[in-house]
Image: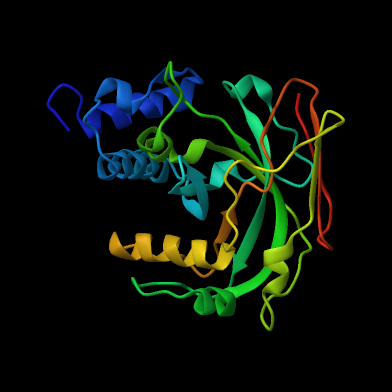
Length: 253
């Protein structure tokens, strides 16, 4: 990046945007020359500050923006309790979307992780409802670099308790039937659907491995979205049904 806006400066500003729920100009606006590598430096810098505040990383996410993968990490503060209500006053412009979550019981490390290894490391797959709230703003919409820098817009996630076992067969992941209803309106299919979740998680593990990181044995990994997102307003109610997984319900106040 050029000297006008360094990754360190931008990460500090982004952390303040998190703290005070205020939007700020996107990385691609502050520095049009910023690269994806710069964006991941910003992402990691913000998460490192959260860790220093006793808010460790407990999970990861694979999503898609502009047809390119976005690898993100969940701090502990993002995980919602079973009966927790999403507080709209602590968010900027949130949307909700359904994802699936792989609960890991084995570590995935290195840069040559395969889909078969992801399957073997997965204890179960459950449904989840994610609240996405981008702190960055761009007059023409966020691009891939911005989505990475903003940690995929991670804000909150409600993870289901009961799911499916894929230890012996993973074909059910390729034929998920999802109904996501927000404020009595059913959401349609996403513009960009991840059709091979195990391959996506393997790519995430290899990305982390190239940076010296790992997918920890007790982490969860979200993949999605499964439908188009919907705005989350005060009083909103979201309900998710995915195959035989336990249904989920999220409310906002």
